[in-house]
Image (tube, rainbow, N blue to C red; front, side, top):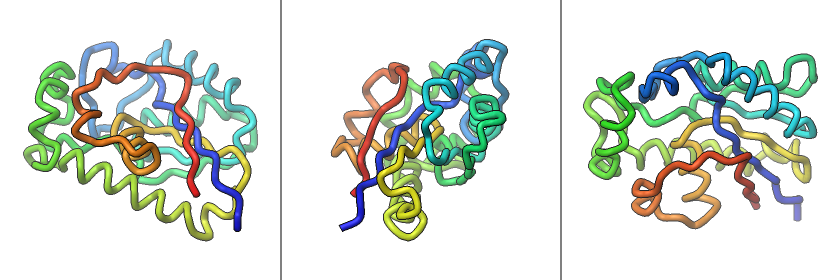
Length: 182
């Protein structure tokens, strides 16, 4: 039986939109100066990563680029690791988006997607990691850089958490979440 994949998830670093209290959603976003410093810390903390899978949104890509500059670590972007698409509400004030999350568990945001759809998208990425793509890094540390939706997808698929519980919790930042993909 092949070795399980050891996955660590880290959020993208602090962005200019975080400073402004904006829910960026599917907009690219850019790191703030604080975010670039935090990205360097992330790189030092995760220097043993064999590969980095990252959301293709600007703030996540910038986090990976700053964190692993010159390290030679493969950085592979995947759109399925994106944040939830708030549709016409991308770029809206974060408190308004967070206050209404429960309303969009199954119902898509206007012109966007539901949280369940975002979690399923992350699940499709994990399904691919169970195949030849993931076997390449079996037994090695794999880093994923993404967003709230990315972490919730990991928590639901690999941690046995219910999305209905996650949407009511405050997203408390920490230095990574560890998972095992069998």
